[in-house]
Amino acid sequence: MTSIREATFALNPWAGHALILKMKNEYVRNIALDIILTILTCGIYNLFVQSAQINALNSMLQSQKYQFLHWLLFCLVTCGLYHIYHEYRMSEDIARLVGRDPGTDGLISVLLTSFGLHIVADAIQQTHINRFYGSTDL
Image 1 (cartoon, one colour):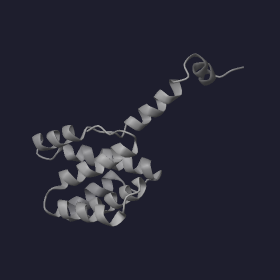
Image 2 (cartoon, helix red, strand yellow):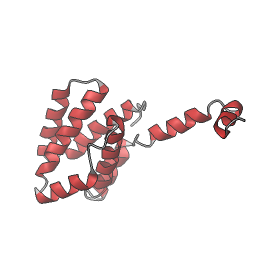
Image 3 (cartoon, rainbow, N blue to C red):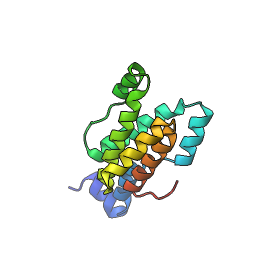
């Protein structure tokens, strides 16, 4: 007795690959669109971007190290200062996962976020996330 999955592969050997690509593409984002929507919504869309990046990084790490609600609450309590630390941690973890030198990316994220350019830090992080999942498009 063959399973439905085996029968699907017999008829279409690429069916399983499409499922894997769909799962990977879930975390690939259009960086230019994210920046434009964040600017047009006066930063509100960045909450969605942060949530998506947290989910992508947790998937990359294969653990639940980051949680959106914790990030949001700590940012509110510390008037945004926690976000600087959060960007540093995320950049360091992404750098390790993609094989980059961990010290540089974290420092760049801290500097950009400190000067109010967190959108640029998020764009750099999303570039590495997209490359991790095999996409080189913006």
